[in-house]
Image 1 (cartoon, rainbow, N blue to C red):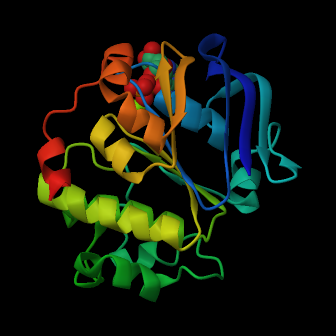
Image 2 (tube, rainbow, N blue to C red):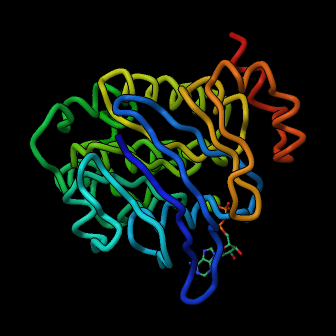
Image 3 (tube, protein in one colour):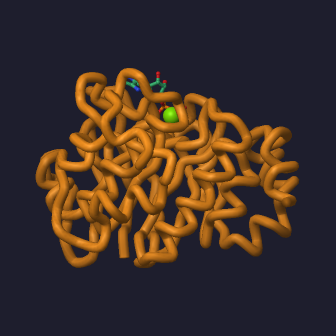
Length: 239
Ligand SMILES: Nc1ncnc2c1ncn2[C@@H]1O[C@H](COP(=O)(O)OP(=O)(O)O)[C@@H](O)[C@H]1O
Ligand SMILES: [Mg+2]
């Protein structure tokens, strides 16, 4: 179980996230939706230790990680795929697979099997990869650390529908291999397709919490509540 209790967090003295609580069971996917600027990335940055946690608690299993440093949190099993991907420009794909790698199911071979497109680019530098390849690489780099929980911040952002479909399939496989995933996703259809549970954030606060079935049943209500648009991906998910 990964849990966040009554979290207040932000940047320096600024509070962005207010009184946010949620829990994710092991091996499940929680989608986090909400408009631009409501604090989704700040939530992830607070969980991973880059933003300021003012109060509340962050628990991974029996471990309280609230006061842990970014490094300690990573060692404890928090894997992070940041929104801006943060691929190393001057390292090759293969070299990325060595950074932060720890023993477990996910090694370079498993990542290449998950993303055959990446396997074909092993010797390419981060700088020359396409957006989709960079995203696969950012996910692969987090995977080889064999974390207990993976935080993915808008992995589909700015990518073509075909690439998005491939990524969704890959994320499904990652979850089915037992990974616990927190997924920030602006497109409700993607959130619905992947999530066991979903929370919505508006202006730093929790405004919706439900399971996938509830979200499907109340989709338009939740859309109106959160104000997220969902036009372009819908068609691709019907296939
Ligand atoms: N690194 C940062 N330093 C200071 N303020 C930030 C930083 N990142 C985001 N913010 C602020 O936090 C608020 C929430 O932004 P963000 O968490 O990025 O929202 P979202 O991911 O939901 O689009 C915004 O007001 C934004 O300007
Ligand atoms: Mg963001």
